[in-house]
Length: 505
Image (cartoon, rainbow, N blue to C red; front, side, top):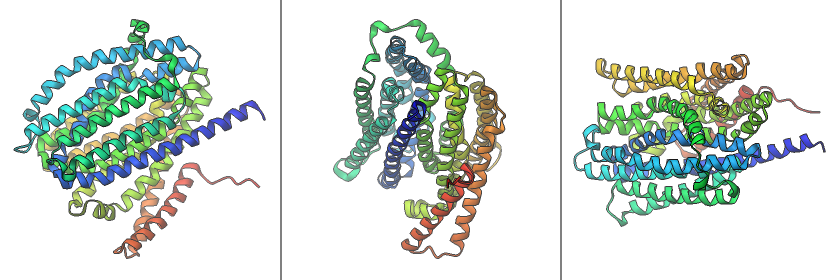
């Protein structure tokens, strides 16, 4: 067998294994999240539950700062490892780890003030102030542990063993779910503090798993204080800065707006808005996993200087992620009312469904732009993109404030701004910028996004047409309609993303 063909088959086989393992991990995570959300709301109430996603967004601020080191660490380590430069890879790994320890210690000071003064800028219901502050402290501690141990997670991509990463992530999710169930089952007093304890314990478990897997997969590049390099730190900061700036833009269109809803409209409204973002968060995690499958392959092609092969990997990533995004978003939007009735019962309102649709639709653009973003990271070309994204996001945040101040749109205005900024950025700018980086026509990346939106529109139309002639009052009828719709959506999605299948005679 030709050596090139053999390597291609091996690469395809490994990609398939990674896809199955990653899919299983995220299916378990999504299932647990969907099961735990009504459980948490029932135990804690909508207002208290709303502080869980708010805490996640606050810890995301710390992640932005830590991203100065972690953001492009995987890129530098993987590139040097692929080129056979083990000492250089060890140098980057060591520099990231010890710098992250110091930076985490520094961040404890401002984050500590944020915890103490949390009730000064957040709308916290009476009687929950102490619990919320303790909860925020636990969540921040968990976030810093994740950030410091992140460098060990680069071993999965470096060794191209994303199946191991999926197993580790699944273990952390299961630990969190089991602990939450135990703590909130009535054995102890019901409190949101239990959520913080569960998250912190699962972060410690995940950090330990990352370390032991790094020791197994890439033992030759484990951190060593003697290998710390100021030159490597400067390179990491130079590129990581723009990654963090780009993530700041993303945070401004999502997390910042959630906090803004709490400040402007109160804890109850932010609880509803956070519920509406749940489905988008689940889809985002799955899409990120799918897109990350191509990072090790794209990194190797870039390290070799093969732009055509790099383009092929990016397009392959777009097609795969686009297909799953089309199917998932179409089914979610088409059966949203029925699903929310089964999932949340009395919490299912027209406002909640409308906000959910507005958060889900941009995920089509986000999903197909993830491979383009990862390509820019691999090529270390983030500066211009990051600056433009932050600028656009700041304008969006200003527009949200203006709508809240001078109109009666309430949280719908905030959701509309987030919808507009995300669609424009990921549907228009990202394809053009990626095309510029690789020197190809913008339609190369724009057309897959357009085809995905058209396919999703047709799919949702088919689902609504089927629902209009079916009686979905029974669970059996709903199940039959769902399976029938899924078959139709899979067919539409395949034609929209991959085109007419080519049959070999």
